[in-house]
Image 1 (cartoon, rainbow, N blue to C red):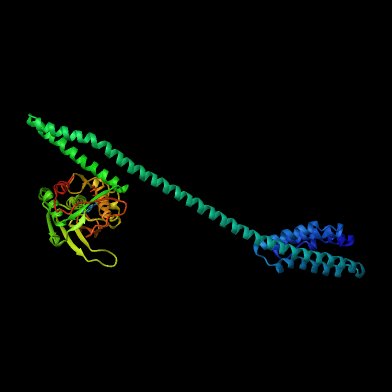
Image 2 (cartoon, protein in one colour):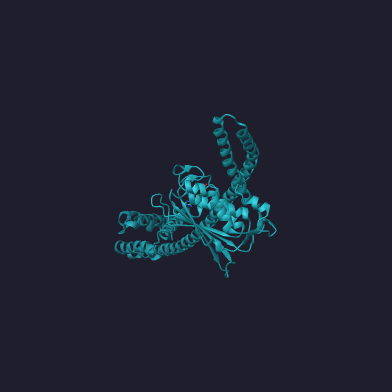
Length: 429
Ligand code: ADP
């Protein structure tokens, strides 16, 4: 490959040979030219090899085909051949051209090898990159899964803490409250000053309301922890609901609302917990009163549902009102504990006042109690509209023959229609 004469000739023709028509090939052309001089001068191929290797790597990286890359040394060789043929005497020209061809055979071979190698590396790099991305996404999925599991554990812990808090707070408050109620009653009886009587009554009413909230908290914690006890006995829903209506009569009159019943007297006796069902329908009717403006109408409708493949024979009680209604997005959320629709500014205070807010436990307990009987409750409404009052309907389905939820403590009371105990337990809290 070494040819001092050729080396000198090429060096003398730097101007002529060191240029190319293609702009993008200029750098490779010039570097190759230097490499050829080095080869011809010292027989040293390192420079030309590294030039070709980096050109091949670049060509592969930018997606340039091998034929395109080989065009650069080929055009350089043609030019050298042409010039030597024109300028050099035949005999030395022959030697020089032989040396040129040996060098270009080397250049072509190295270019092809380097291109193949660069292609392999690029494929391997792509595969490595793909497996790296895969490993990374797998790691991320694992991280997210762990994160979600951690968040779920934390949620469960918070939920448990909330249940514990409700249970402890309710138990702790119950004793002092019973004392307050007792003393308020005594005070009411022994007071001689007329002006003090309304004050004692106020204390009694306030502590009764607090007592109801504490009972709700205790019920909620019993439902949450599946510690609810059911006392099953034959229940006449017509009687139970009529008792509730009687108890709510003064409120209905005060709110100038009409309450109608349909089909309740056709309902069969069902096996259930009277006290708990009293609680369910008292809450639903009380809510219907609260969320219906003065002068509105409430319907309580009883129906029998025949047994089918999916469910046993049931009764269905619908408490329908002409009130403010419920937005679609709230229809399920209202059964969650402490959930109240809208901001608290929308609500007034009071047990039966229009839009009177409670702690948001009523429907949660209702749902828990209905489901403890393996029943179902759903809310239906066209939407929430305080001006036009589209109304709501709460539909409760209960099996006629008791089939309480597994895990509950169930006591079956003797089938005596109205024992003294039953009668006393039907009295609302
Ligand atoms: P609260 O103690 O706030 O009345 P509930 O659990 O009984 O709590 O009810 C939850 C929410 O469901 C209420 O704040 C109210 O927005 C909505 N709601 C319940 N009953 C009715 C009804 N009959 N009509 C319209 N909205 C109702």
